[in-house]
Every structure is written in structure tokens, then in C-alpha cells.
Amino acid sequence: MEKEEKVLNSLQLAWKIRRHGIEMTHVSGGAHIGSILSVADIIGVLYNDIAKVDPNNPHMEDRDRIILSKGHAGAAIYAALAEKGFFDTKKLITHYANGSMLSGHVSHIGIPGVEFSTGSLGHGLPVAVGMALAAKKDNKKHRIFVILGDGECNEGAVWEAAMFSNHYKLDNLIAVIDHNKISGIGFCKDSMQICPFREKWEAFGWNVMDIDGHDHDALRNAYKSAVASLGKPSVIIANTTKGKGISYMENEISWHYRFPKEGEEYDTAVAELHAQMPDGTEDMYDVNVMEGEIL
Amino acid sequence: MRDRFIKTLVEIAKRDKNVYLVTGEVGFGVLRPFWEQFPDRLINAGIAEQNLTSLAAGMALEGKIVFTYSIGNFPTMRCLEQIRNDCAYHKANVKIVSVGGGLAYGSLGVSHHATEDLAIMRALPHVTVMAPGDLTEVEYVTRAIYGHEGTCYMRIGRGHDKQLHDSIDDFKIGKAIKIKDGEKTAIFSTGAIFDEALEACRILEYHGVNPSLYTFPTVKPIDRETIEACACNCDWIVTLEEHNIIGGFGGAVSEVLAEMGGVRAKLMKIGLNDEYSSVVGNHKYLREAYGLSAEKIAQRIEGVLGLEVVKMKEFKR
Picture 1 (spheres, one colour):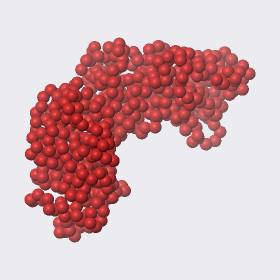
Picture 2 (spheres, rainbow over the protein chains, first blue to last red):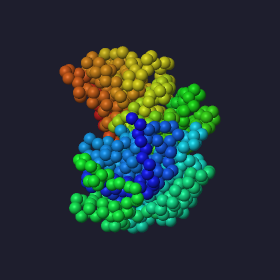
Picture 3 (cartoon, rainbow over the protein chains, first blue to last red):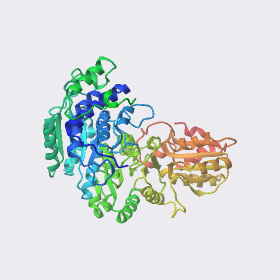
């Protein structure tokens, strides 16, 4: 059966990523909701307005490659793929469940549209580098997008890859960093100072853009500018807020690990998301929308 | 072995434009034949093995057959997780080549001695583990891993290895090679220590012992059939590897033996006795120092066979 690509705008897709993220972590007792919320706009704009992908042909040769290197925000990619029609959105709720394909960190096995499995940090950019180099060698025109965390940039392999990408002039490689300023157990500035961040990437020879990672126009412009950049790889430093959209999660370190519990936490999260719902969006987890389906 | 590997890879690359060689800033001189003929397909990733291995996975997933090349433990342990997550889990067509397996780098010291690589690589699902024994085997193994879909590891020797057989009939991954028939004792050798194994057989024959000798260019998947057949027909199986005795080739053989029922051969594993190589010396000197020379191998075998010529105290270092 032909999968129908749903027509959304990027605000709607990003909202749905957040809404799925809340539900997926709530039901599963999963983790990393703070990261899922911070990266939602980066992924929403990329899948909706920039990347060439086709749910009916997930392996098409000239698709853009997308790797979520910060694999712990896997729910965001799963949600985006399901909303784009790669698989049934009803499957999302099996995240973390026994027998499910949707592991906490991204895995490609059995999930159409997932380009590469991640979870251990610092792997995505080097793999993307290999994909970019192969595309260059074959004179192919697709782009390679890779989304990293800022804490992830503690990993040495990120900088090995950064050095390589400049040396080999991989201008088909676009890295986006979800710069939410919070790492595993603390604020980046306290845990491991990565600043001056922009200057580091510039020193490694990259085309650097420093933007508001929740502003969709800014994201679109940055993506387009990165795609047009010639002769060097591009990095978009997307300044974000960890836990973006849920007031009590924003900039709170504990939400790197926690999930919204039944009761006030869950109810408040859903109520706050409903207050931000873009026009023309439906909440598939709303009892009225579910039409009596038991999930 | 490294020159024969490169020569073979050049022949393969002439016919297949998807073959790439990625070096970690090693192979000065050795890689020259490849990079002169295929400058676009020799990628120098610099001294950065994590990125090297992951980018090889990325290229392989785009349809390339990527050989990574470095020294000793650099292409394996330095980037073990990249091999596991990025290559093996994705069944990426990456062929990891380590030059200077075992004690081949001699006086350069313990950092350059790959003596746990077979055990570590063998523990990874979806990784085929190869250790050719001479120049002929390295040629066959190179061709075989090129044609084998998925992640492979090949440990080769260095520059001074010999050619010990002319050609191999029916070479297959996972199949041991019979070098000679014998009685009651079977010697299984993997990797470049083959030359010592061959010489040890000559010493043993001189002393009236006639062992059979097999090389195992494949450590994983292990040749269960040959091991079981020898275990039924022999009193002793002796495994020989320039590697820790834990978890490597001898470990693989012992796993097969342990699962056998009935009467079977006893096992003696010869290798490094769970220690790092701290003695300084060239390759030959180190083999002697760690009981891996032909003479020491022969003495140990004679020892377990109860032959009088052996003075066991020589093995107590």
C-alpha cells in the first residue's frame, strides 16, 4: 500500500514531535525528554522543509542522509519519521517496550527511514564524514545531515572528524548542534567548558552559523545557507533550551533523565503543549481524537 | 606480508573501483603501489583511528569496500566501539587490517605488540577474524575477505615473513589448511607463527614424533569439523598463536573441544601466558623469550608427551 505523506508545516511537525515525546516517555517510563524537546525544532524543520526523503522509498539512492548522533533523543527521530509516513504513528507508543523495535537510543533495524544507529556519543559525525566522502567520490548530489549534542562535543572523535571534513573539503556535510547548554550531570560551563564554541569550529575550518534553534525561519535560512556553502563543511550551532516548551522542564538538569509521571507532571505537560498547539494540528492522544481506540 | 597484502589489494582494486584503502598515517613506502595507481582511492585519515573506522563504516554503507590499515592495536583497540557499533552492528563492508600482529614489532615495545587482538575481535558478533600464516595465505585471505560481505578483521605479519606454501587448494573462510599428516598429535597454528610451527615439526620428527600440522587462517568462524576430527583421532591437540593464551585461537579451539562428548584429545595451548611483553628484543628474540620459538615449542610438546629429551625447567622463567 502506498504510504501517504502527511502534509504538515514545520511548526506542526515540531509540535507533534514534542507531543509524541511526552507520551512516549510517559508511557514507557523512558528518559531524555529534555533532549527530545530541545531538538524538536531542528528535526521538525529538517524533515519538513529541507531534507529529501521519501517514505515510499526509504532507501532511494539520492535521498539526503540524516543521522541523529545524539541518539538518546531517538524518540524525536522516530516521531518525525512516523509523522512523515515511514511507519504507523501508533507504533510510537511501543518505545522502550519489550519486543518493540524502538529502543531508547536510535537503532535502524526494522525501522524504515533510520539511516544509522547511534547512542554512544561521538560516532555520528565520523560516520557522516564517510558518507559525505563516498558521495563526493561518486559525484552524487545528496547532502549528509548530522545532529549532535553540545555535551557530545566533549568526545575526541567529533574533533577528529571535524579536522578530516575540513581537510577533505566536505561541503556536502552539514552538522547541526543542539546547543542546549546542559550535559549529563550539569551545565556545560560547569561540567566541561566547550566555549568558545563557535570559534572552535571556525578554527577547524568550518562554515559556522550561530542561530536560535527554536526559530523556524532562522533554522530554514541556516539550512539553506549551509546547503549552498561551497568548499567547506557547515555547522549550525542551534542555540536551544533543554526541555523547551514545558515550563517546569526548561533548563532543569534532572529532565535529562526523567519522564513525566502520571498525574500533575503529565497533565501539566500536555496542557502546556495544548496551549502552544499550532493551528490545524490534532492531538492523536486526545480521547476525542482516539475515537475510543485503546492504545 | 604487508607487501603481499598491498600487491594483492592493488590487483583487486584494478578490477573493482569501489575498493578503497584508508590508512591512519602509516605505511610509508608499503602503501606506495596502491597510492600511485589509485591516488583517489587511498584516503589518509591522519592519526585518528576512531574517525578512520567510523568513516570507513559510512563509506561502506554507501557501497564501498573499505580496507582500513594501521599498526598493531591502533586499528582495533583504539577504536573498538567504532568497530562494534558502526561497522559490525551495521554489517558494514569494512575490512580491518592490522600489520605487525603478535610480537612482530619487536624492540618497539609493548605498545606496538598486538597480543590480545584475536580474542577481542572474536568476541564481536558479525566480525570474521583472520590471521594468515605466510605470504601465500595473506594473498588468499585478502581475496577472501574482499569477497566476503560484512566486517572482517585480518591480522598480518610485517616485512620479513616467508612463503611457506605455493598454493592452497579449495581455500575457504572458516576452513583450516592441512600442511602435513601425522600421528597422535595435531598442531594447530594461526598467524605468522606458522614458520616456527613448521620448524618445530621438523625437530619433533627428528626426535621420533610425527605430529600433523594445520594452519588456521580463520579464527572465526572456527573450523569445528577439523578440530573434532583431530580430537577423535589424536591424543593431543596443540594450539599455537603469537597471542595471549586467553580468549584467542586456543580459546576458540578449547570451546569446541569442551562441547564434545566421549573420548577426545587433550589440549595444550601455546601462546603468551597472560602477560604483556616487557622484554626488549627483536621478533626472533622475543619469540624465544616467551617460549614461542620452534625449539621451545618442540620441547613443550615433547614434555606433555612424556619424552625424556625435554628438560621442563627450561620453561620456568
